Image (cartoon, rainbow, N blue to C red; front, side, top):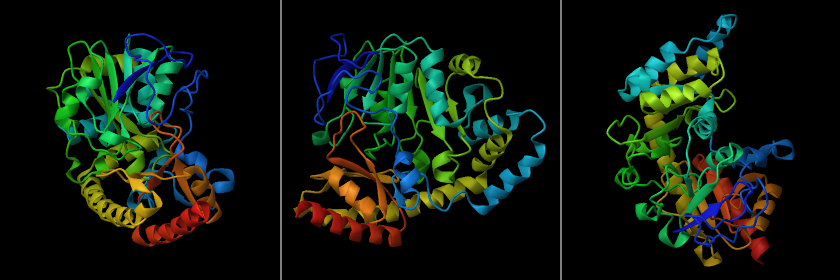
Length: 385
């Protein structure tokens, strides 16, 4: 692992976090607001917009065939109440009960992405650090709020595993994903807890934790870790990306600071109804079943990808999220050829710590995976030949 500084302009700096180092994924340049050589604002949905709308989508990590009918009906019923201003008290209480917390430790947000903006704007961090590769929106939000952002880059040679000692001691805000997008690495909770310090906020993005069977290594619900802030999303497992609903779990003081930074009525009535429904006992049982199904489908995808090892293809394992990270020669050309064959996958070079040799592939059902593997075989053969 290496640390590097990324200033407000995107240039490397020589401060406490800058060892003058670059990741194995390629050196960073100084282009403003792009996160160095990485486009922090690029997300998987860009692969399937416009001319990609007809492609089989393996670029976006939202579970397919969602939301389920019962959830759509609950949301549709809420439309009769749109004349009233949203009242989030019931949904907030439901989320608190789901995690065994008092309501003062819960804040509902318009998706987890809003929470990153609130954290960046409301909290007075002096030395924020983001552990990469991971979802790029936290760093983008911090930059937009005027922060100088330090990076800890996890190495492919270490399996993108966290070494807590690599995070600078003077960091007063640390952001890490678990399981991490795009690497699909699930860090041990004990390792993440080692990052906690007095005077430091430890932000853990658990947007994909409900896709992990048993949610092992989850920190949501913990109150014994100083400075812990856990973010959850309800958009991935339940197919609600267009509705925007997530939440923050943190100390009452932190929740109050974030709430003050929110606009009035930030979460719509349909989203509040969805939040309450998605933390019900029925929903939790359904999500648990889906997590086991995703694990089985992921094993099938990994087994197929391993067969391409003679072609220089490698996969980050063990993978624990609803996606896998793949490294291969000429990945950009393979991705383009896959589009010609009807499949969209996520480019990896927009993530700090990765370069054009990386692709992220969402886990889908066996039939879709089999069709993808056939297309992948053709693409690798054509590009490699």
